[in-house]
Length: 537
Image (cartoon, rainbow, N blue to C red):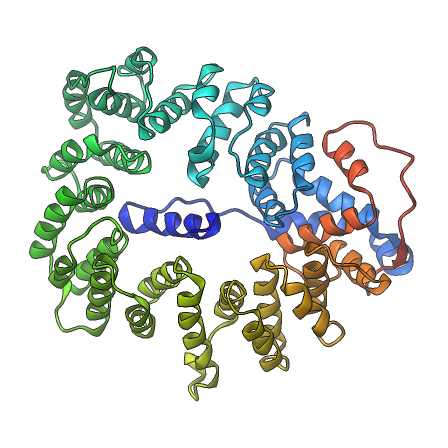
């Protein structure tokens, strides 16, 4: 499974099993502000604009400011899969501001695919910044591929970060020192204290299980006000699921089933158990479904079981949600096929056609994890809806973009045919080109080159971005279009404007100047002059 697919799956799992991460970031505002601030308004319309300077300004303003969307900008640039961006992220670590330093470490981890670099982490001395890095790495999955034992040995971590590192070591069945964890069982933060107690209860080969701290903590938990009690329990459930703390499933399930906890807390605990202690989770799930037979409850239960269908769920367990409703029947058929080791393509298509948005989203994510030749059947089925006489049933721009992205992995020719098919619809052709760009498949350059000169402005910007990403030669006209897109004149969204800015700076051999400015050091004065063209009207 690709890291992108895993990320999409994990985000949906978090939503289905417990509660969603609220990680929405503002994107367009600051990037477009940066673009508009490249030059005075009069200069933008009446003077020539140095496009390479504009590209560098956009990148610098986006990556070295204090906006909370910095993480999204970094992820967008890392999404180019260009190894050259690693130097850019490492330069961010040398910046004087906390945000660039934190996201520089994370960006370098994303592009290297090796996790957090201990040397970069050692350069971060502020404890709150170190905590932020570990927190974001945990949410994004970066922590799972990081050398956590080496990182933990550095010390200087706040309590939550320390527990995350120890929990990841425990997840890998490696040894850890219980002393610093034991010191946290009386922590003022009940989540930290409770998770420390669960880790000690789990133990390891050299550190026998110690259930006493957890038993003591339960009294503290039950004494909390209702909102705090349930919030703490949900946090412990989520942490146990993320770090696959199997020994925590039974005590958390038992406690969540008692009167002091809400039904939502109980449902979250069931979802956690389905992932990390499947037999116990299935038993609790079956009891819950037997007692809660409303349509809403059955749909939620079906989605919850589907999310764990790869964890050894008995195929017959899905029958519990059947009540004659076609959506629930489609869920049950899909779950039974996956858990029973059968080809799930037909069942996934049936689920997609059932018309339930959240289950359809899950089916799309699950289809993206299939071998390309299997997932292509699903994508082509959806593309066949392009001819549906009912406009409401035709794929939206968002779906067309996703289909193009996924189908590029197995059948670029089909995507080329799709682009040709929607060429007269500006929204759909731009959506298709967006999918080609986001696929990062080299064959996309051939599609882009074939369409150059026939696309709407956003499509032209995407086409040259695709060509640049593939490392193909850029003509003078290509450079002109790419530069305009980088400067905000290509009608691209914020993240792809940043991608265009990076590739334009690279094409103009301005990356060293960019890196110097990102680091906050003296800018170079020896770089080659940049091409200039009239600013976009």
